[in-house]
Image 1: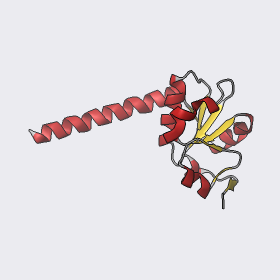
Image 2: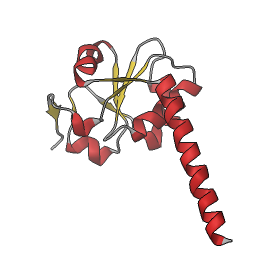
Image 3: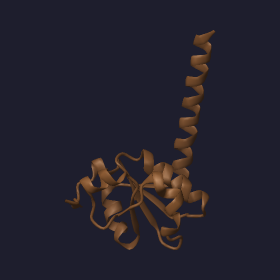
Image 4: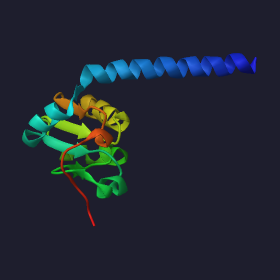
Length: 126
């Protein structure tokens, strides 16, 4: 019996994950580093990682609005400009995009592979 419950929970988790993945792909455009680099200077560049991660290195010009603070700080993000989001590997940027989409944001973009794949200039806080 416990095996069936465990398998049911696992199946539900997999289905939920697939649905969220499809939804995120629908509301969020994933850009290669070149595409991201070409557009982020004309947009709002937001790093949704936690402050310690951000201080350890971030894309030049990025503002830090951690996913954990996004609900409280969402007014800092303008709706009339594209929003370029990134995190370490795209998990949190996808969740941030879902929050923004629910509040009416439509121009949402994320960096393919996240910050760990970024090969451009970075800035660190010392």
